[in-house]
Length: 318
Figure 1 (tube, rainbow, N blue to C red):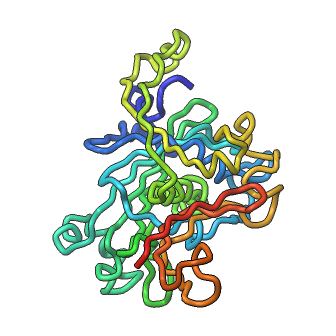
Figure 2 (figure 1 turned 120 degrees about the vertical axis):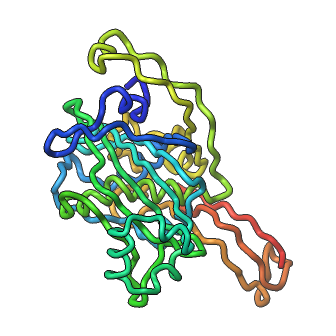
């Protein structure tokens, strides 16, 4: 597909379930980040010929696979293809990070703050350092632009993890015309973005600036009526994913299935996950690297199945 989805939405507006034009998404000061590699890895759990509404068993853990979701920018647009989903060709998610203080809290829509307090208690503002506000859009395989599916708001704690209430439940609300559908779509539209944000916080990942997308072909110009803008964008490069998935960062034709990909031969727990930064005690035994004794800070890193994956660490003596 020539052109990024964000650009195409500027000339072919998304519609809702009632075919009402919802207008083009805006991005005032943020970056457009292409995360097809993350999505290819994420969607490998989908069964063949998956269709929206089919039962899913999600192998990803919020604590292990999305441990850092604090917003790296105040505003972002994440874009990715959805291999294996019949109905959806491509997804774009606008993400806003709102720092949680009394001033910002009062700027939020009252319906949102009321929903958070009603569901999670008066101490919600104290438990959240940020709120992530996500609006997903998509291009369907029939060519229709759809969205936003709803407004997803997630609390983020000061350490970057998803915030929890006093009962240990994650703090989030969904505001959508069809809450049941929006909740069902969360693993497909929202969670790949949370994984991408987490990868942005580790050492062995980088953002590579890309040239604008190629101009539309003659046939594509007929489809979209006029040429869309060509925004600059970045690709999120993650060495560990490319290593686990065969060195090319894709899933063998974009299907996201087979090939012994990121799940260590199919089924079971995903091979690659993020280890949070933590102190490790090497005061006993052989010590760190066989000679250093004491407690050391191990930076956040990616860990994979030792047979097909990688482990990269960075140690700082404390």
